[in-house]
Image 1 (cartoon, helix red, strand yellow):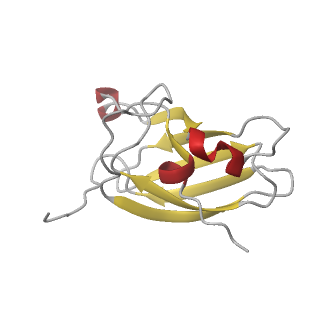
Image 2 (tube, one colour):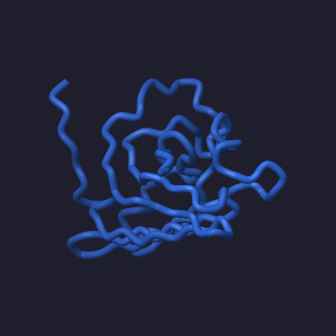
Length: 136
């Protein structure tokens, strides 16, 4: 049975804040933080804490996102979304001013292997030309 977890929404949120340097950077790497209420769902009870690293490479027409996750429950399945807003601050702590996730974009499935490692590479628009529309 495939378990549905939304990495940036329910399980992990961006650990690095987006800064003005995105405009000049051709590549950036940052860590994801585990959302505390979901830590037990992600990892093995007596194993190492789950971790994930993301690298975003800027392209001319679209970008590449490479996600590497480790120490997940073996064979755990995810749906990967990018979201407009995170419920965690840049230091990984809960954001007391969080209201909602805003727009969310489904990107890919992600499946941990038998050792709890998972990798996905996504080619999509992330940086310069991404936009969403919400008339509300």
